Amino acid sequence: MKALSLLHRWTGGIVGLLLAVIGLSGTALLWEDSWILLEGADDAPISSPADLGAAVEVAMQAAPGLSRITFAGEDIGLHQAVYSDGSGAYITQDGTVVERWSGMWERPELWLFDLHHYLLLGDNGKTITGILGIVMLVFTITGLILWWRTRKTFRFRLWPARYTASAIIRHHRDLGVVASPLLLVAAATGTLIVFPEISSFLLAPVSGERAKPDLPSDLAPVAETTDWARVMANAQAAYPEAAARRLMMPAAPGEPIAIRFRQGFEWTPNGRSYVWVVPDTAAVAAKDDPSGRDMASAITEKYYPIHAAKVGGLLWRLVMTFAGFALAVLGSLATWSFWRGKVSSPSVRVVQPRRAAS
Image (tube, rainbow, N blue to C red; front, side, top):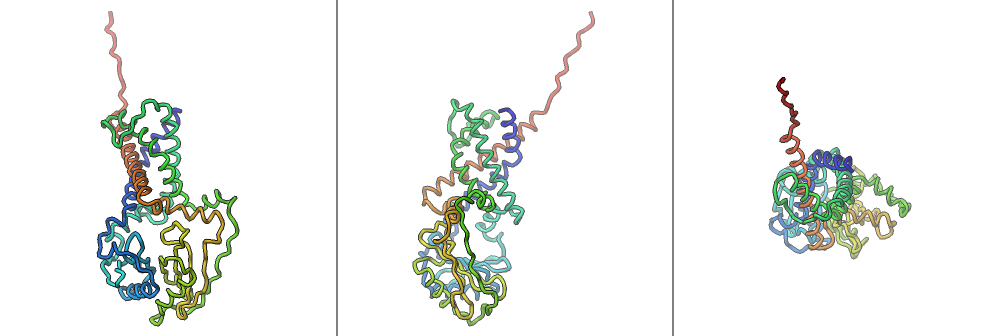
C-alpha cells in the first residue's frame, strides 16, 4: 500500500498540472454555445436545401479555399466556414458574414479546442492527451483504493478548509472519491476517442465486417457552375428525415463532395451518416448509413457525445462541469502541495553534541 501511495503522489505531482489544463479547457468548451455572443448565434436553424446551398455559396465568396462548412444547429445558430489556410468565418443564416479570423488564436473556442485535444502540440499532443486519459484512469482507481483506509473521516468540500498539507490531502481524497465515477467516464471516453485501436480490441466480440463505400476518383472538380442547392437537395433525398450538418469539399482532385447528416438515432452532433455527391451533376455517388452497422459502431458513436455532454441536456452538462472542475482542482492542488512540500522541507541532518570529557 505504501508503494501504491508513493506512485500515486509522484505521478500526480508530475502530471497534475496537465490534467488541470485538460479539466479547465474541457469545462469551458462544455459551455461554448453560451459565450459565442455574435449576431444570429441564438437563431433557430433553417435546414431547407436551398438555404443551405446559399450558405455554401456565401462561404465560397467570403474567401478562397473553402475546406468545409458546418451548418447552423440547435447549439449555435451560425454557419461556421473553415478554409484551407486555417482561417474561418461565422455566417448568419441570412447570408451575412458576422465574424472572420485568420487563425485559431483570434477565436477562444478554437484555441481552447486545440488546447484540450492537442495541448497545442499537434498530433504529438493528441497522443499525450490519450496517455493522460490512461493515467487518469489509473489515478482514479488507485485513489479509490487509498481512500478506503480513511473512509471514516470523509467530509465533502469543494475547496480545502486550510492550505496545509494534511488538509489538502484530506480534501484531495474526499473530492476525488465523489468525482471518481465521472472521472472514470471522462477518462475512458477520452482515451477511446484518441486511441480507436483500444476500442476496436475491446469491442471485437461485437464487431462485424463493414464494407466501405467505393468512391470515384475521376470526377470533374468543383466549379462556379456547381449548383449547391441541387447538391444539397439530392443529398437530402438520401436521408429525407435527417438534418444536414456539414459539407466537406473534395480532399483531392477527382473526389466527390462529402456531406454529413444526423439521423434521429445518432448522438453525435454532426452525425455519421454520409452522402457523397458528384460536383458537376449533383448526382449521389455513394452513401454510408450507420443504421445498418454493427453493435461496435453503435457504441463507438456514443463516446464523443457523452464526453462532451452533447446528450443528456442541461443536467448532464452540469454533471460534466463538476467533473471538469474537480479534475482541475485535484490536479493543480496535487502538484502545488507535492512540490511545495519537496521544496520547503529539505532534509536536515541532526548532529548530536559531543559530551565533554570528564
